[in-house]
Image 1 (cartoon, rainbow, N blue to C red):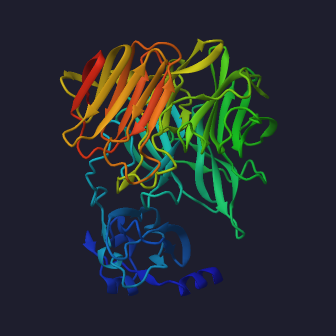
Image 2: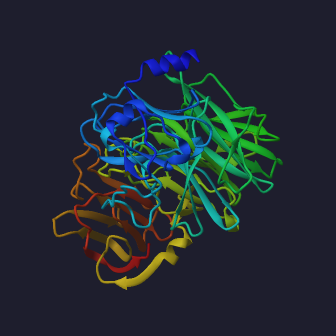
Image 3: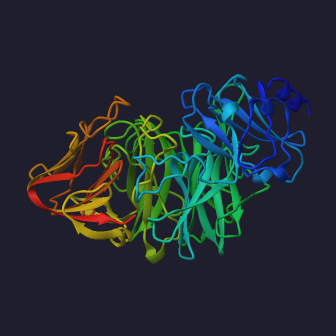
Length: 556
């Protein structure tokens, strides 16, 4: 009670909602009244100004603090709205919504709206992809907890419901039956006493779903404490109950996060791979609750230009693949996905390459936090990536939402010059998205190009904006130049030319174009490249030298 009293004494505004449906809340109401939950709409719409400093929004029920989040409440102008869902608090006592550190004369108090309309003030943004997964509102980064069960692909993701910049980490949830059309399932995991909800994974265990995630809590002395927690779902992953014995794994190390548990049939037990600084740690468990440390991997292997994050470990054929996302340290700056191929005996991963060998899963600038779906059908290893880069993810020119996921990809293995590499091809579901053949590119299409030894592909629009892709069969390289692609001025790190080795010759390219992205693949899986673009109008012209293009509209 003393903490609550102190909290209330420092409030700069107490927002009070009157009891009419779908109405604008007045400044006077904000200063003095209390909402009766049974007489109010489900959503309180918070006006956001991205350039504003963060304030704190609190939900208090019967004098007890229920929720507290950092929100950039509008001071001079409203850029967009986000929803505060009141439903979890309604009917449980007197409800009060409070704001700290926001001047009482701010415009947000004049623009508050309460109603039941989940699509209230939703902006139709020109850079929202048509066939890539995005959050409806708010910020998204790493894909989390992906699994397949009963015909449904479940995708969770790092999510800020209260703004389109990083912060307030929750798990958002979307579901799909075809990996293309996604249904928003809302928030799956919200912050609690252990901290905000960082990245993690889900497994399917005897028909139930278990999520394992990192809880991150700031300390009074700076930095944060990260611990591993679990939650259970009995309804296929729609709702979770957090384990009362959390956390299940702790350490004093910095950057101790991103758990990836999996059942290892070879040892008839659970394994866990976890990122810690610049290494991966491996554990084993009989029950997902009690974990035994087995070994570490990473010292002197691969790229160490930044923190190792978001690991994955799985078997393809007779070999094991260890995914290691890194930030910074990518081949063209910022974040990227590297991997290692070798053997794993349930206790130790042994890389078959020399320590100095670095292998990248994608040679674009915007491919990070790649992880695979657990329990995918037909023994597939299907992955998604976060389609952005930490160098500029908070600055890309979208507004009410930020970030998309890559198209789904299936992984395999191939050999080249004595090394084993991971192959990357668009998942077969993308063939099902093909529509009619068209003569020119559209804002959502696939371009299939049969190429020769030297090929140049130029996508452009009437504004003179263009993306140039070049295949050099003699050098065995493929490059993409986005320096003139459209809006490139929001970050000095954005305009760039990315280049990939092709591990031999390429005969056919598959290029996926959406409103703000280009993803290029060798049809045999030996090369992948993902880059964001922000043209002022869609590219509607293609010129190909040294090849023949077939264009398919993609049906969103």
